[in-house]
Length: 140
Ligand code: THU
Image (cartoon, rainbow, N blue to C red; front, side, top):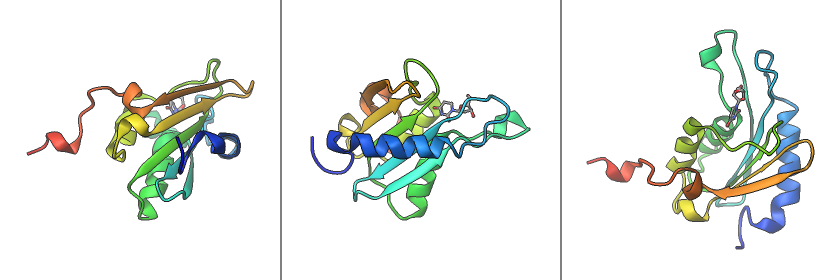
């Protein structure tokens, strides 16, 4: 696989996700997450989880990174890098999976790579994380 978010970029982009994790605002769960969305153009967008005293308003790192990408005018997602605090590294929640799917031209080619403070690494494609997902193609 080559192009934006290809395996050769993993170390730098995971380091960037770790840096985003340091900026997380997670005083309620104490669980910090950083994420990096790589657009098909190669541009990179950061996100971290941002919690709220009204717990249900908390936003995940992955969705914040996707929002930053969209606000920069980019809608084609190439890869996502996540820095969690779990072992093994956690995968994106269901709501984030659906959000990632929205911006995949081909979910089978969009990599999601997750790491943790121990340096463990796990990888999936968006198609693996949300098989048979609902998309705009199903809408009339
Ligand atoms: N969280 C993320 O940022 N990404 C996920 O995919 C899973 C969960 C956040 C939400 C909340 O702030 C904290 O982790 C605990 O659930």
